[in-house]
Image 1 (cartoon, rainbow, N blue to C red):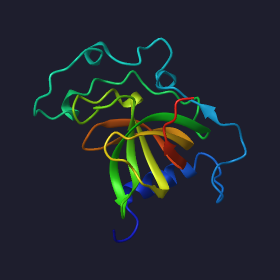
Image 2: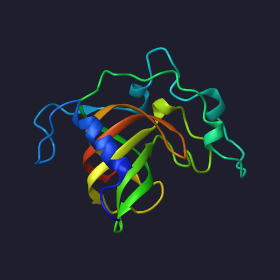
Image 3: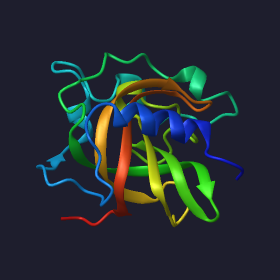
Length: 171
């Protein structure tokens, strides 16, 4: 890769404006453990009815079948959060993943239509993460914020600047 990737740079700088970053990684403040339901405005369903059952797989563009989002929550903007999900790699540095979409279930955006934007998180990592491949289960800790953006896979409602990405471990 020649020079910094514009996608990574845009989200790293966007999130840096939300709160101060430290060069040493995780900040001393409290880490907020989030679930996917926490990303949906109160009173809204976390997964639309059309995605709650089995869906046929065809060759149609998955992004075109993304249901509309019911909005995003700003409660955790600028906070350090921890969220677990499945990785869809978007950018690499050597063999390590430096940008990925974090999704709530296996197959999202690739094998079945993407969930609403408020159930997708664009993650950028300064340190490349050696992934096990598509849909690796991970837990990401870092600065969180709303960041409406579009990828070729889906519309995304949140961004997370990762201080730490680790394989998911059931607690």
